[in-house]
Image (cartoon, rainbow, N blue to C red):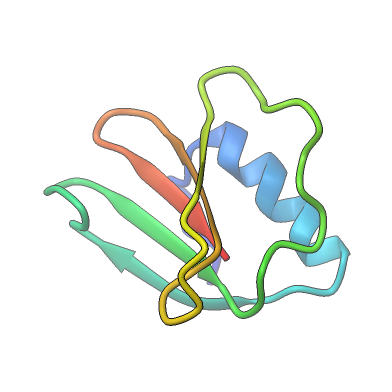
Length: 82
């Protein structure tokens, strides 16, 4: 279920989350713009990075109806959210 075209820097963060016991809830495409990729975790992030990988930005959304944290990389953007 891991998209093979997920941005490599986000794949690093995803691997850490999966190793910590989190799981993928859903994978979507073309949000927020055409060509985007969104990987949503089942739970909030368990292992937030101290230092972000190159090219990754973080947004603390803090919306329990959607997600708490968003990591974004690439253009069109790929998002890892949880």
